[in-house]
Length: 433
Image (cartoon, rainbow, N blue to C red):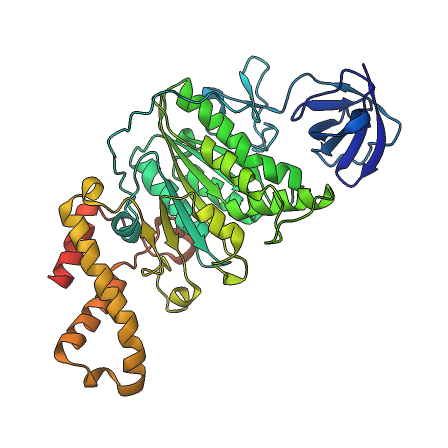
């Protein structure tokens, strides 16, 4: 039974079906030259279906007929997608040949069945070669790391370095989801991976700043759906990188605005909690394989207490906070060592030696922060010998966690550094013991 378009407002298209209407998350096809695809957002009374114009096709007009597609948005899955770049709808963006019809496809909004196996796998640490991460926020297979910071403090560079280092160490299959970030950054990442021969182990999905909020809100889910296939069917361990999770919330917020939804108290869409939770729950591990995710989180106006930032942060096992004050001192990566935390930093996971060192380092860094105010008034020479010694150790520790990035070598001509976890622990012991 055909439907009729009854109104068009920006990306929102209302279609009326007298009977046999579509389900939520199903596609509706407009009977026009472009065969425009609309995504069903929600249903209302009297057969009114609220749809989203996925491709911003402005040829849709009131009175046009439409039919159900009897399917949702599908993306290509399988070995053929490795080394390729796709948009939220599964279309290739790399200028290479299109995938043929024989390639398997999967509906992105269909949540897979949950596993009944609740066995806890033994924690496995993956070395990143980045001192500050391997020491403060150990990279544990199947867990989530959040990189938080404002604009221009190095979130994307740190993500690119992680992809580069882990892939070169043979860390398995990587997925990258570019959510609402700059087109330049996406292109730089693609070129970096291509130049280092890392595309052969990477699948990329992009919906950058130029795309409409529908595609920006779907790109993370499209990448996740593809990653789920490799995890469940091919039993792969996945490294999943998302840049930027705050842009996902922003895109959802824009959609809520054009759908005339009343925002919550924090100013975000009323469904912000479930939106974030559903996506994060799909980035999980089971008996078939693991998904280890690194997610950057933009901080609007450098306000780390923003409700959306706090919400995403609570889904993470480890949090790396990048600070503008640290960046201004020329320290790279610009990590705030006092705000960076991890629930993975336990003796059972990292071992007694690493754990005890972390306690000593954190104590020295906290003392350093308290002494800075005193030194600003009376000077360092007025401190007691013990305080002077601790202050000096803390400064050496901060410098020790500074390192050059491999992915920046072409820009600054400085070779990048790679440190094993053992090297990192030894360098810290030399300072504090």
